[in-house]
Image (cartoon, rainbow, N blue to C red; front, side, top):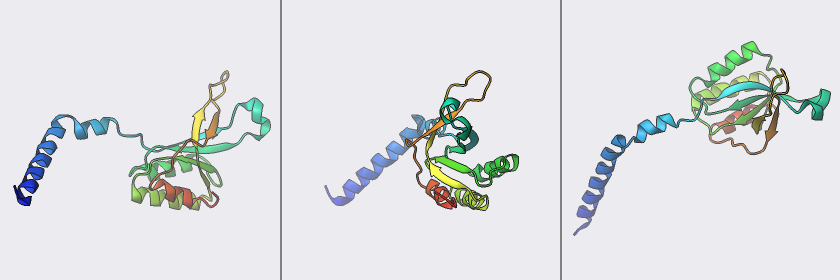
Length: 153
C-alpha cells in the first residue's frame, strides 16, 4: 500500500464524516446552543446595607459581540446617560467590525472598562435587584478590543 492509497482512504473517511454530521444534527445543534448576544444593563451594587450611600453603579455587558451589538449599544446610550460610566465586560468575543464600532463608542463616551461577572442579588421588597461583581469572568478575542477602548481600565 503506497502513500496515495493512504491519502485516498483519509479523504474517503473525511467525506463520510462530513456526510454523517449534518444528519446527526451537527450544525443545527450548534444553532440551538448558540451563546446569547451581548446585552447592556444598568446595575447597582448591593446589598444596600453594606454600601449605604456609596453604592457603585455600572453597565453590565454580557454575551457574544454580534453584528447588531454596536447598534444595540448606541440605542442603549441614547436612552441612558452613559458618559463616564463603568462598563463591566463578560464576553467570549465575536464580530470584528461590531467590536471596532463599539470600541469607538466606548471611547467617545469616555467610559471606564473592566472585566467582571455581574451576579444579581435577590430583590428586597419592591426595589430593583442589586448586584455584585466577581472576577470569574472572561474577555476573549474581540472583547479585548472593548477593554482597551476604555479611557480608564
